[in-house]
Image 1 (cartoon, one colour):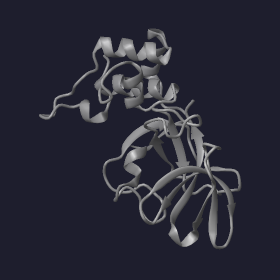
Image 2: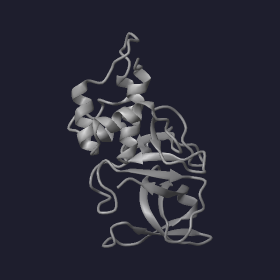
Image 3: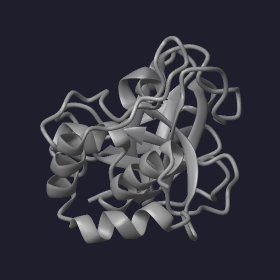
Image 4: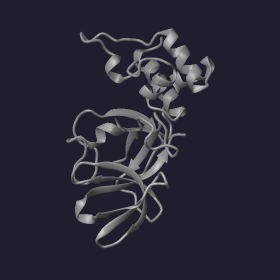
Length: 208
């Protein structure tokens, strides 16, 4: 007998195979972005809510997968992957989502199955809008590792003490400042004093 957890777990793994969050898969399938969110899997009075066959069919089409694949995913474990915390990029500038080391904290995070990273504090950001094109598109997910070493030329996420969050390339780090190259090479380079930087973390994976 199929269980509620098996079906939703298969949808989570289907999204991960496509390099998407559950909400990203729903959007690509032409559904409401919250259709596959964990908050929609149980009703307000505690009853289990199951995905419709129509929504599963649309998700399979969006992911380029077959019903046979979905059946296999029902019994599969996540394998070498694991769940990591996920929030939308626009929320990252808000208060309460990170501690002073850049580690995820507080409430409001979802979970998404993505490739394993050695850093136990790895988190994911879902890109929204077109501001980071052509490097990243709307709905793409980037995996960020606060514990990974950051080197010249790495793509990074930087959060300033004023709360701004940016995705950029580290051009150079001195004892006093970070020199950053925007992903859009037509934009001017930027220098930020280290005293203004709350944290910097390397992007270790991105969905494509």
